[in-house]
Image (tube, rainbow, N blue to C red; front, side, top):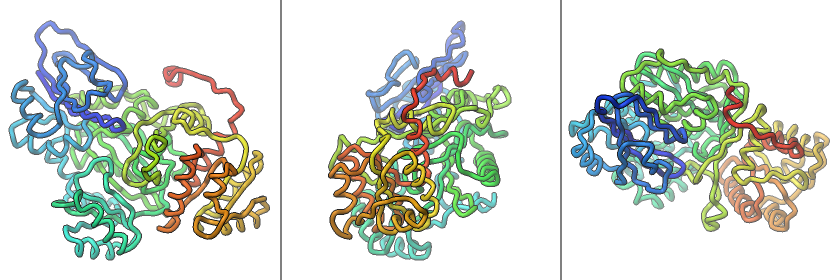
Amino acid sequence: MFFVFFYFCFFYCYFYFYFFFQAEDGIRDKLVTGVQTCALPIYQGYKTIMVNCNPETVSTDFDLVDRLYFEPVTFEDVLNIVEFENPDGVLVQFGGQTPLKIAQQLANAGVPIIGTSPKNIDLAEDREKFGKILDKLHVTCPQYGTGRTLDEVVVVAEKIGFPVLARPSYVLGGRAMEIVYSKEQLIDYISRNADVTEGHPILIDEFLEDAFEFDVDALCDGDSVHIGAVMQHIEEAGIHSGDSACVLPPYRITTEAMDEIIRITKALALELNVIGLINLQFAYKDGQVYVLEVNPRASRTVPFVSKATDVPLARIASQLAIGAKLSEFDLKEWDAINHVAVKEAVLPFNKFPEESIFLSPEMKSTGEVMGISKTMGESFRRASISAGNILPDSGTVFISVNDSDKLNSIPIARDLHEIGFRLMATAGTAKELKRNGIPVKSVFKVGEGRPNVVDGIKNDDVNLVINTPMGAQARYDEESIGRSCIQKGIQAITTLSGAAAVVRAIRLAGKKIEVKSIQEYHN
């Protein structure tokens, strides 16, 4: 028997497609593993073929599969391979969004799709159909709408209320996604992205500013659901999940919110009749859990989760696709781990100085690293070092936070002061810190006068930046600050949760890093 798999390793733009063949009698059971992202199980009686459009990948090792094709992952090219190889099944859930887009075409052409069916994939991808499912299950999501013309898009955005998240349909990596704060900015957005949006509707979503975001990876066999992990993003809402650092287990969530996230995950996985992997993204704000996105496929976090929990999600998902049940596996509970794992993105801004360093819904990272230890502070420290983000152990910290963050910024500033850092802040933040007995030097914002914070960064008077913007002007200031930080190799933190993590890591600056294998953590 022969099956086909699509596979996509998000951070390096690898597209894979796998075929399973029925093996000849006498071939023993065989499991091929590598990096979890590229784990290609070959079960007793089955062989695999991969289709990969990127030759610069770990998956090019011919030892991982029985046959390997370097071809574009398009309907025509994949169909040609299927017609030549005559597989018994095609698995599309390991290839990111690209194979999902052609799954229905392949099914219409008679290609046997295994795992989650194209019909159920469409239920998750179609806005209207998915909205009805959310209503049925009593699940809350941000307000949304679509428009095909400028007038339609403006009407939808004004009805929802600014700020909104604008994005074209059918794009990868968050391309051309943008947070829009006004009608004028929306019109400008449409004009700049006409080539992307032509022929497709513009999707408009309510933007939940200053919310916490969570990722969930889960397995489903159609009858039951296993939660692979719940991860919390460190960066602010509105930043692409591929650019966000995340923590496993979450560090700031109520029991009620966690229970709701798990309830929604299980309900949606079963309602969509997922066979294999599913990824869900949530936001949590003011005591309310919102569903942001549901993807009936493997996500970029699957390798991270698998390493952190010692559960090979990709391998199990492949077995579910060919008929196995979750009850057949002795699966560990994700929240039973006694360590903390932090995933950090690798951002290439030093290689592309002309590119905007402003993190946004459009993904910019080119890789990821993982830090693991017994504490969040140590794990974050290890991940930061691995990603090339060197944290200072002395010097001056610039702080500028939005009004809603001012109260919660006080303990962070006090911790930094007690560690020995000098503090520099914009007028509003400085006023609050001084009122609470924390010594601080006041400086101008960008555009208020000279010398301002950017001047301080350029003059090597700043060693770390904590800046939590809110609103269009604040985000403009953040980009100016961030660009200067990149040029000087200074880390800029844009959330208080991220700042708290950095403080924890800095406290450990003098501590020797004890190196252990990942197997030691699991054993």
